[in-house]
Amino acid sequence: MFDATLVPVRRALLSVSDKSGLIDLARGLDSLGIALVSTGGTAKALRDAGLPVSDVSSVTGFPEIMDGRVKTLHPAVHGGLLGRRGTDDAVMAEHGIAPIDLLVVNLYPFERITAEPDCSMAEAIENIDIGGPAMLRAAAKNHEHVAVVVDPADYAEVLESLAHGGTRLALRRRLAAAAYAHTARYDGIIANWLGMRTDAEKPEAFPPGLRLAFERRQTLRYGENPHQGAALYVERNLPPGTVAGARVLAGKELSYNNLADADAALECVKAFQKTPACVIVKHANPCGVALGANLGEAYERAYACDPVSAFGGIIAFNHRLDGATAKKIIERQFVEVVVAPEFDADAIAAIANKPNVRVLAVGEWGDAAPHAYDYKRIAGGLLVQDADRDTLLLSDLKVVSRRVPDAAQLHDLLFAWHVAMFVKSNAIVYAREGRTIGIGAGQMSRVVSAKIAAMKAAEAKLEVPGSVMASDAFFPFRDGIDAAAEAGIRAVIQPGGSMRDAEVIAAADQHGMAMVFTGVRHFRH
Image (tube, rainbow, N blue to C red):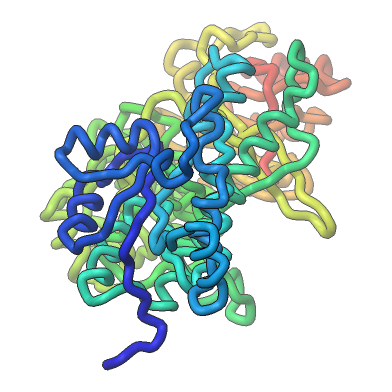
């Protein structure tokens, strides 16, 4: 069918920092009879591949100068990109400006260079692209006549379109929007980085203006509730080990709540590193967490903590999920989402018997989490903070009670502390032998959270006596310790720092409990 918006491409300008797919793209363009113009390292790469290419200096009649700072900033380039076909033909002819129908540009790697700890200000400045953004904005503005490409992922689609005679307006408009998003993100990164370094001797922790760039990955059926619209936006260059970047291997469409709970479960299970672990989350709170000799054992122990709450929950593992464990889950309970680094083929086959269960493979993650920020929207503003990290070691613990915890209790205390970090405040976690026994979450009073943890343990018929307790923040009064002692808790881990610490420690001593301070609080709201 004839498309009046189809624009043939006769000449293309290519100038890229990321040369992924460059040669294949250029070969495809050359095979279609499209003349290639290029700059610097891109032109060299094309010549080395045996492709015919003209230097941009032959177009401008002016050499690249100032170590490449000035090469494309010229009317012969920008006129070729901005010229409106049928409107500016005469002035272009008068000044010897030939149209450029396709622009392929990505920008100097400012983000990658400045991520290096030893990056100097001079090096950062030289990696601020000037000509590239100017060309991108020009071509994107004139997308009625010019196609602009910033992402190698789009090369194949563009070549396919060109093989059928040219580019269509819908494609050019999408590519133009992507180009503006690319330059906006690029400028934002530069503004954030420089804004934090107005005093070169003492960079600020946060930029004076915050510019964020996320890309829509998915429009969701609805938000937290059916009357709310929602979408998932993701960062560029997502690292492995994130729900946002997960591969959906099976199941129906993910919901807003599925994604939020899956993220909570995954981030919690990451805390246990190489030891096989399982976390079950319901409404953003862990309801069962356990370690095991294998994933099957970890799942059995986590499920037993709170079988009622586990119904319809999100289950996360920190190792590749095997078929036997997947079969056990499907036969035992209703589950919304299963998350793991990877899945064995027989695990996927087992879950496939329940077509509504979503299966998320997030990839293997590293031991050290990269620095990140957390964002919380408030009316009229945005709260920004460093992401909470748990780096506590056994050697960091300070014993403050007369009784010293034994080795087994120390390991359980650290386990319970890792879990408490992911429980909504006020958070109390009872644990024993590498598993949660009872979890008290989200209460306005810490003593009530302690009582709920004991109640949950009783409901699951789990023995509390001999267990340990973790609290995400200090105990303001001794009543939480008294409630824990009554339930049979023998050791406590908490940040300390209350004006009544002496009273709380005295309560622990009175009950013959061990108590350790971490010096770190883990509120979660």
